[in-house]
Image (tube, rainbow, N blue to C red; front, side, top):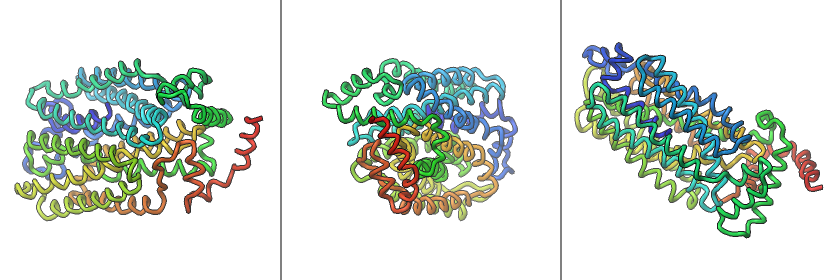
Length: 476
C-alpha cells in the first residue's frame, strides 16, 4: 500500500491527461518551450496532491497508537485497509480536485494506521536472532510496491484519457490483500498479554516459537506488561528524562531518513527525469530501473542487518549517498540550464548516480529508519513512542513532498547539494549518538544499550528508584 502510493503519485503527476484535467496550468507550462526546465511542475496544488496523504497520516498515527494498545495490532491493520480502500475508490472516480484530495486524505489514514501496526507486529513476533531481517521485510514490500507502481505507470501512460485512473485504482489490490491477510494472522503475544489475555498470549507464543519451552520469554512479557500498566499516560510518560534517548533517536531517524532526499526522488522520479530532458516514456522507464535497484538493494539489508549490525550499514550508505548526490548536483550545474536538455552520456550518468544513491538508501536508512524505533522503546511507551516516530516520518515526508518542486525551481541543481549537506550531519549522528541494537532482546534494551552508551546513560539514572519500587510492588 505505502510503496505503491509513493511510486504511483510521481508517475500520475507526469501524465498529460491527469494534468490537463486537474492542473491545467501545469499542463500548459509543461508544453511551453520558454518555461525553465526546473520550474515546469512548480505548483502548490500539484504538490498537495502528493503531500496531503502524509499530512493525514500524521494525525492518523496518534489514533492508530490508541487503537494498537486498546484493540490490538491485527484490528488496526484491518482498519488501515478499509480506510485505504475507500480512498482508492474516491481517487479512481475523482471528477474534481477536492474529491481527489479527500481520497488522498483517506489513503493517508490507511498509511498512518498500517505504518503504526505492521512494524510493531513484526518486532513483537520475531525471534531476536532474525528480528532485523524480518522487520526489514516490511521495507522490502514497500520497495516492491514502488517498483510495481513504476511498471504500472509505464504501461498506463499510453492509455488515453483514463490511464491515470487505472494507475490509482490498482492501489486497491494491496489494500485488499492486507485486509484478507489480516483475517488469517494471529495477534501478537505482547498485545494479548497487554490486554489481559495471558492464557491466549501463552498459546500464541508457543505456536510462533514452535516449542513449549517459552516460560522465560512469557514471564518477561508479563513483567513488562505489568510495569506498562502502571503507566496511565504513555504519551505524557515519554517526556520523562529516562525516555528521552529512545524518543530523540526515533524522531531523528525519521527526520534524517527524509532529508537524504529519497522521497523527493521517489515521488517525483518521472518529473525529475523529464526535467533533465527525458521524454515521457523514457522518464517512466528510468523510474522502473531505479525501482528495481531499490528492491534488490533492500534484499541486501535483509541478509546483512543481523550479521554486521545497524551502524555499519548506515555509515557505509551515508558515504555512498553523499558521493551520488554531489556528482548529480555537479553534472546538472555544469550541463543543465533553463532551456537545454542533457546530452545522452550525461543523462545516463545521472541515472547511474540516482541508482547508486537509491541502492545505498535501500539497504540502510530506508529499512533501518523503521526498524530501530520499533525495537528500542520499552513496552510501557512502545505504541506511544512509535506513534511519534511514524508521525515525524509523515510530517517530514509531507514537508519534502510539498516543497520539493518549489525548491527545485528556486535552487535548481543546488537542491542536490542541500541534501548532500544533510547527509554529512547524519553521518556524524550515527557515529557518535546512535547505539548498536543488533542481537539484543527488546525488553533488555534499557540495561544493555541505553545505560551503557557514553552519552545517553546520563538520562537513564532518573526514575530508576521509582521504577524499582514499582517492580517490587508488582512482585509483592
